Structures are given as structure tokens and as C-alpha cells.
Length: 168
Image 1: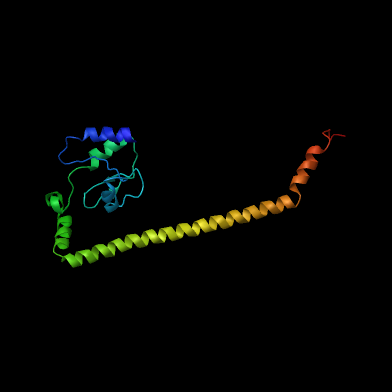
Image 2 (image 1 turned 45 degrees about the vertical axis):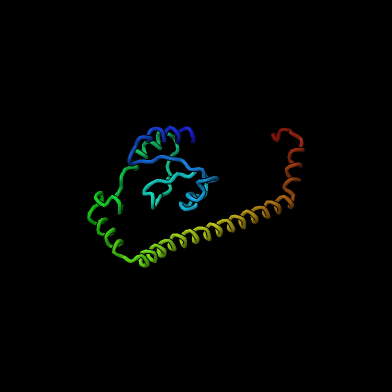
């Protein structure tokens, strides 16, 4: 992926509105990576610098370039309010009118919803893993019981039987 990413960075190098960059999360870039919740490598983030999103698409040069061309452009945001439709402008205005404490509480509430969803997902996956392990153990016990009942011996007797014609 690195050669394709470097090629993409070169393609957008002169842009005044788009930034394609890489960060070494194991060195000086670690604080930036931590602040943007980078947990695995390589991770691709995109969007408003204050609210980056995870990129989930293909990682070939052509796919990345197509995505960048279609999505990496000035977007509706508080700093680009002129790009917003009336509904989004009203939503931004409402949020801007909130006190710092109210906005922080609203953000905390929404982040808790995300954390709760992640926690619920992990708990359900754990249940699935436990069910899988239980089913696997049951199957292993049944296989062992069949073998203990003499399946191997039956197969050995069958294969050692004289090979003749059953015709009369």
C-alpha cells in the first residue's frame, strides 16, 4: 500500500484544499495518532480535521484516487458555512449558540452512545465466541464417543475383509 499512498500524496501535493499525508504513529506522530483514535496500522482517516472519519474502502491507487477526487473537497463545516444547506446552517448555528459547557455535555452524551454501542458489540461477540466454543466442545465429545464406540475398528475390519465377488 505504501507505494500507492506515496503516489497519491504526489498527486495532491500542490492542492490548497486537500491534504494527503502520512504520520509515523510510533514516533513523533504518536500524540496526533492518539488524539485521532488510530489503533491499528495502516489506518486511513479523512474528512474535517476536527472530526476525522475512518476510511473503509479499497487501498489500491485507483480506488484511493477516486475516493479522494470525490470526497476530499471543502465541506460544509463551521469554517465553511457557505457550503452548507439551510438545514445544516441552522444546526451549526444552534450548536454555536450553546455554551461551552452545554456543548461539552452534548458531545459527552453522544460519545457515550458510541462507547455503549462498542461495549454492547464486544459483549455480543464474546457471547458468540462462547457459544462457538461450546458447540465445538460438544462436537468433539460426540466425535470421541463415536470413535470410542468402535468406528475405527469397524473400518479396519471392513478394509481387511477379502475382496471378492458378492455374486452367486
